[in-house]
Length: 141
Image 1 (cartoon, rainbow, N blue to C red):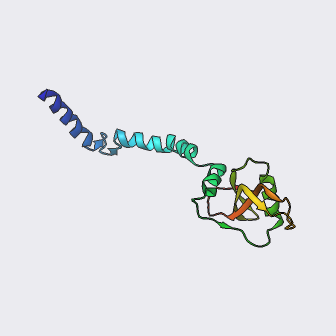
Image 2 (image 1 turned 90 degrees about the vertical axis):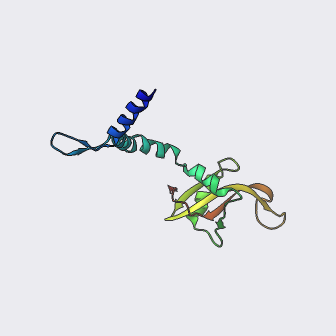
């Protein structure tokens, strides 16, 4: 058993020594080479795979827990058109889009317009609330 520990200790000490070639140049340790290869190939694909899509990002941002500021006042025609396109999505859907150079968060939420108020549709309906987006990942329109 002591012989096994001694051989493991020698192997550990050998792996900690700098690797040199016959010319005296240092070589990368095998672990460093493996890490460099992993970072340049697999990590890039993992990061892309694990990154949130614009829809997932929008759904996270539209959650009641997320602080957000609705767009107030008159909306650009391009923003209104983009919001109308979102109405085909299911209730609860969300997306982050850049419209006319500005990022917006579009959340499909229940809306209510009181009867006789002059705004249609009256009563409860699916509507799009437009918020100012702070997210860096969006789809451009």
